[in-house]
Image (tube, rainbow, N blue to C red):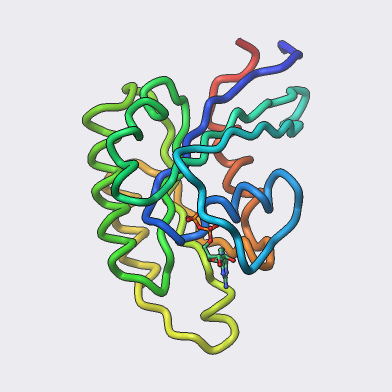
Length: 175
Ligand code: GDP
């Protein structure tokens, strides 16, 4: 078996305020903040994790969700091996946007890109808030489009590491 470091370029896409930066902050620093400043343009962070004998270095591009930055997204996803398409399970519009990102990635990104569909903010439902995107609807999209699928909370940390480990396990390691 090969050992060493494998780098994975990963991009986050999704409507503004669904929690993209918060998911990255949780993964990289195991931290959360209620009043995050919006990302302008894009932010770059790295994080290493061990998957079996391998060290995987995630090179993470967190893009701004605002429409005025949407035309920049191809710059980030064009060379990416993996993408997280994030929506907020309490915001139906953000799921519609997620469908558009999946379509765009399949049309424009590299053929082998691994895409994870991520429904964030499950803690709101756990604490009595109303879910507006059914889990089954998202699972159906994931199945039809060949996506990994997770529901997460950047706030509690639920399932956040699993998203990245799931992607790491899908990428051929030891290159
Ligand atoms: P981005 O624009 O997609 O990067 O979203 P942010 O990470 O900036 O988050 C937008 C807002 O949602 C912030 O106020 C966060 O604190 C909040 N937020 C992010 N993730 C969660 C979550 O899992 N649960 C809850 N309740 N709030 C979240």
